[in-house]
Image (cartoon, rainbow, N blue to C red; front, side, top):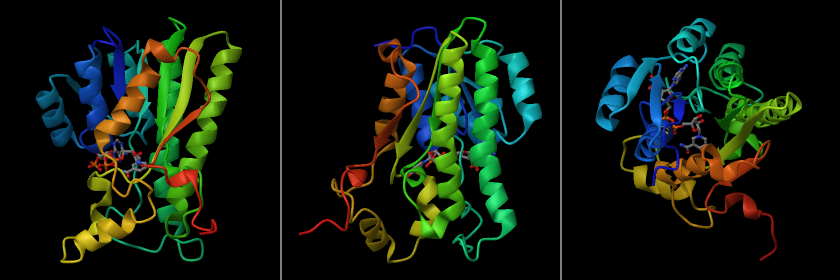
Length: 259
Ligand code: NDP
């Protein structure tokens, strides 16, 4: 209990899904949580239910980060969680041959630019004390190619690499500011809705999506929050520049393995 007692924790994209689970978990562990999201109504509702503070933040906007830095000048933990697949407004081609430049840029703008700005803000908010934990939510898709979601995969791979640059930079400065990435796969949140649909084949689609996952099920947001808690806490003070996969065993093997 209270593994984050009195730590100020900023979480982006936390109105729902994984970010919300992290906010609730950190709050339960004694943190002072600042739940942020683009969606002001949903963010305020989620914060009220958890019992924490809400601040609107569009991770793409440098001015939003500047505003947050005046409201929350000191932070102990920043979780860069906000992310999009690019399919939110409907299924458009995202393969390397047909993806539009606009779609490609928008996915990178939220996922990569948002994480870059979040890391920069986090460093500014942490360097006074010289300690802190930055947690970037990447994806299993940042470790393998995804032909049908090329921009998403590219942005998540870049998050993985940038997390290591941030970790090394902070270490070079002599700060105990750690930076790590988490790589979930198939966690049951609203991000899957456009792909699952509402039709009669929804269950079949769900089963098909986890058919190659050794644990044969979707993961739950709380299971990702547990990893974030470990990385945020002082139990992980020697963990920096690394990545944690949470994927039901998916990356442990290969569909091409014999028998
Ligand atoms: P959700 O879509 O459920 O939640 C994402 C949240 O981010 C939403 O509240 C959304 O708000 C918000 N958001 C979107 N754009 C912005 C923005 N520009 N600024 C601030 N907030 C924004 O996603 P998940 O909880 O599933 O995913 C969270 C993270 O985990 C993402 O980075 C995702 O890529 C990653 N991930 C998820 C996996 C999964 O299987 N669920 C697997 C691998 C990685 P709004 O509703 O207004 O758009």
